[in-house]
Length: 251
Image (cartoon, rainbow, N blue to C red; front, side, top):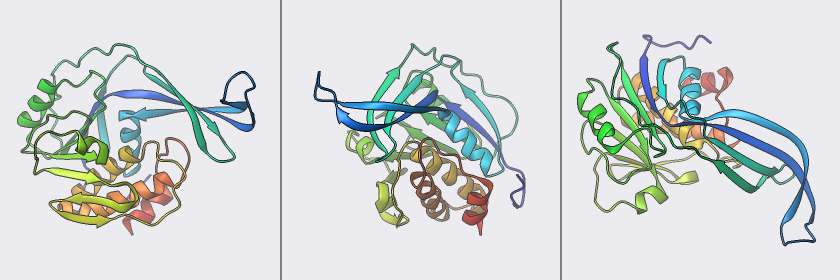
């Protein structure tokens, strides 16, 4: 894909990754053995999730991305009634994840992105080391409650924000369909029919990074990230932006 831009941006992405499995079927009746629905199986779809979803969406924007992630396979399996797109059950198969060895490539990067689902790959100590040793902007999406306050932007959602025990000044707080808040200002979200929220935060993060590299200001990056996330929630499963999506976003 050839996305027009002033230069070729290089990004280093670090974080936890998983395999997203979607088992689709239809629900016609309840189980007579227990008050749960019976899913009549139709098909299974498998996609790359978490950090890998960020990677795929960053790549959709035409960015050159190097990724450091766990070798262990975490699998999230969702069972979905395709008539209503209602998720009936999610089964997580999580294995112990070995923490990353702190060794950052010497290649110069335009941005470092940390997609930290707190599965063990990025420790708190490593998180701080990466931020304070980086010579370029750092963007963090984390489920941790302790993280650097300077030299980075931290994206969290409402639930994650409610768990913090101190005030941070570098937060970008996503509020679902309402949009995202930064420095006391709410950037309204796009009005769309929400079909599936899986992976929307990953798409927002990718849009945020690209928008910042393109415009040079976080205030201009957030609206683009909101629009990217709106596209994601309008589609099912772990959605990766298409060439047409990116063209619409950048025009």
